[in-house]
Image (cartoon, rainbow, N blue to C red; front, side, top):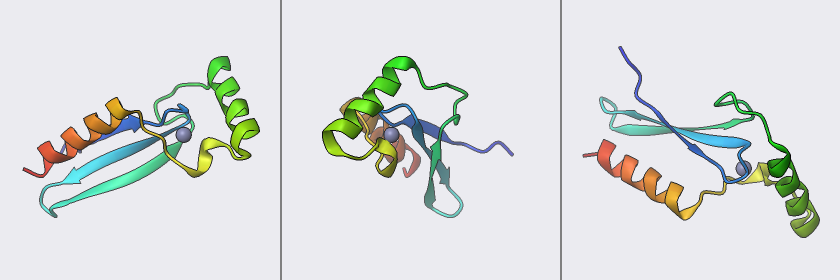
Length: 84
Ligand SMILES: [Zn+2]
């Protein structure tokens, strides 16, 4: 049985959210992964974004998932399609 799922990347590119719809249960499971969920490494540009975030707000991105409007739209469309 193939497990259906979809990943949505955080804007900091160090976490992602996996949505796994379970039609039989009529539920969608959310999982949050940090580093390496898609076998990508943090680029120098992404590291600079982390440093800027820490300097500006005093905290890294790791306590929140930040979705672009476009990614949020894709997630919403995915959820709406899966719960039909
Ligand atoms: Zn993040």
